[in-house]
Image (cartoon, rainbow, N blue to C red; front, top):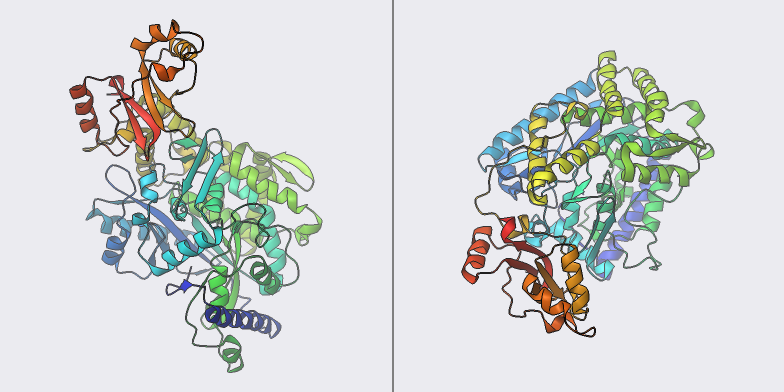
Amino acid sequence: MGEHLVKKLSKAEDRAIYSRQLLNDVAALGQMLDQGLFERQPLRIGAEQEFCLVDKDWYPAPKALEILERLKDDHFTTEIALYNLEVNLEPLILEGRCFSKLHKEVISMISKVNDAAKVFKTKPLLTGILPTIMPKHLKENFMTPAERYFALNETMRSLRGRNFDLHIKGIDEVSLMHDSVLFEGCNTSFQAHLQIDPYDFVKSFNWSQAIAGPVLSICANSPILQGKELWDETRIALFAQSIDTRASSYQLNEREARVSFGQSWATGTAVDIFKENIVRFRSVITTDFEKDSLQELSNGTIPKLRALNLHNGTVYRWNRPCYGITDGKPHLRIECRYIPAGPSIVDEIANMVFWIGLMSGRPAKFDEVDKKMDFKDVKSNFFNAARYGMASQMYWEGKLIPVDQLILGELIPMAAKGLKKVDIDPKDIEYYLNIIRDRVKGQNGSRWCRLSYRKLNVKYKKIDASRALVAAIYKNQKEERPISSWEVIDEDIEITAERYKKVNQLMNRSVITANENDSAEFVAAIMEWKNIHHMPIIDDAGKLKGLVTTTDIEGMKSAGKTAAVSEFMKTDIVVVNPETEIAQAKDIMENAQIGCLPIINYGSLVGIITRSDF
């Protein structure tokens, strides 16, 4: 959101004032369009670079405010999580070596952060989702203490009426419930902006939707969340669910998530796209208004349309229409929000070049793409790309095509023509599009992450495998090499030992358990089949009730057929919580002369640690 001084939109008086401002902003937008006040040339590009902050052990580092204070640079701003920052790059005219210039600027800005962060033993890292984010990093004390974030959090929870659910199923599955929107802080992106001729806006916007699937497939780099392999670009599902205000699919006032791809092709003018967002999504926050946009326009001043921009900032379209002012002239642009941060700066710039090349190179036959493609196919392409990346297939002009063939055979040549059309330097065209071409023929970020993580899991528990993965991402980023040339991590990679390691980093999370009412004979058989030495016994709610060990097996086998395992389980159990230090857990086990420790969080069993784990 551009506005910092915001508040929850709740009072009837505030809502009336805000609604009037919003209606006037929409009317002013239409008048400016009718009067030809919008800038049409030159076209400009822009970008927002989001990034994570990590500590020496590769976990999220909540040092954003300290680093921001040290930077003293207005290009940088906070994000919702204290372990994220964003840098807004200066707009550039779309011509010549603009992409090389932007590339150098991003390198310079990240280098500046790196220097400022050293004081706090912190490093900037570019990645769509930071693999080492754990549940404790999603608590409210990791939220940036700014009114706009608290207002957003409170409003989203109020609209939803209950906590936020997260359920994503990929190769693995994650299902969590959380009390804030801080899951949004797991996501970092490289948001590309392209100024659009306002009188071609609807055609361009529809075209941006049509190409979203293929572009996302080659950019995907975020398959790991909390140790689980999920979608190739898990951000798409995670961000959508992190600020979903719908309590259920039957809620009538909002039939789609605030983060969405859309429901149909755009029609009419750019004003109609903004109107559609207003109709579909209620306003949730407001600010203090001093000026009326229609009055400003009649006085010869170009209005900022603050109410419209405030509403637009809480509707998270993956392709988002934006209004702005440059040198006193209004303009319209499309913000591409689905491209993830990383894996390297050169990869990000190549992604942007590919996208802008396709936007600029739209063939005449796609001027009315709504008549060439079914919107449902285009939307399906986008979510297939998010799930399967370069393994996906795309519906293109009614035919099902492997995405690698589509990109190599049709889209890269189309992007090259588009870049040439807007006079981009031929060397830049060749350099950045070759990075895309090499990625199609080799690997994208998601594939590298998956293969590396699987190798690391041979040697490490999940959390240490995640730490090693982050360490490797940082090392490769520092070398500024495109992802297609990154070697899959060898299993003997070393990571610095942590001084105060916690049991949640070592515990077994995939625990075979039995219910307290299960047959003792049946439980004994399972323990023998799987060579289990310690089996936790739980109730129907997942609460720990007892523990049986190998010493109980013979008694359970000889028990009557109706005997329940609860008759044999030990109920006086020593337990610890996930944040217990490993050294302390080891001492507890040695002093109590026990072979395992169940790990309990809010009464529920979340893991187990045994002597062999040490």
